[in-house]
Image 1 (tube, one colour):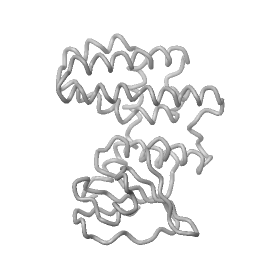
Image 2: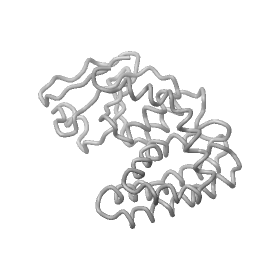
Image 3: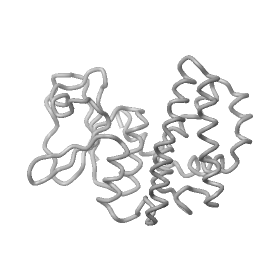
Length: 226
C-alpha cells in the first residue's frame, strides 16, 4: 500500500491512478475512518493520500470546490473520477465489490439501516456538544439516540445489526462509538452509570472492540512514519 503525506500547499498532485483506488483522508477523521473500514472489509486495492486540512493543496481545491474530506478517487479510461460523502462512498464500494456484501439483501432492512444511519447524526451532534460547551445537553441527545439503537438491536435479536457479523450499519456507526469512550474522560461516573441502560448495545460495542484488531492495525498503518 502506498501512502502520501504532504504539508506544503504548493506540492504537485500524486501520479495518475492505474489499478487501485485513492482515498484522500485526514488523520483521525471519523468520516474517513468509515471509508477505511469498508476498504479493508472489501479487501480493496487502495492507497491513502493524507491531507493537512489547514493547508490543502491548490490542485485539491480545484478538483474539490466544496473541500469535502474524505474523497475517493477512482481510475477510469477517461480520466479519474471523484466521490464525496462517506456514506455515498461506502455504498459505492459495497456495489463495486460484491464479495462480502455489507448491505442487507432485504430491501426493507436495507432501507431501515439507511434511516438509522441518518438518525445516528443526532448522536454525532450530541458528542460534539459534550466536548464543546454543554455536556448535559449533549449527553441527553446521545442517550435518546442510543435508546433507538438499543431497541432496534433487541428487536433483531442479533449481536450485530448485520446479523452474525458486522454489516454496513455497524461500520457506519463504529468510528463514533469508539470515540464515545473519550467521554468517560470527561465524566467517568455518569458514563459508567448509563451503560446499564443499553445492555444490547454494550454487547455490540464490546464485540466491536474485541474484533477491532484489524481496525487498530489498519489505522496504525495510516499514522505518520508507518
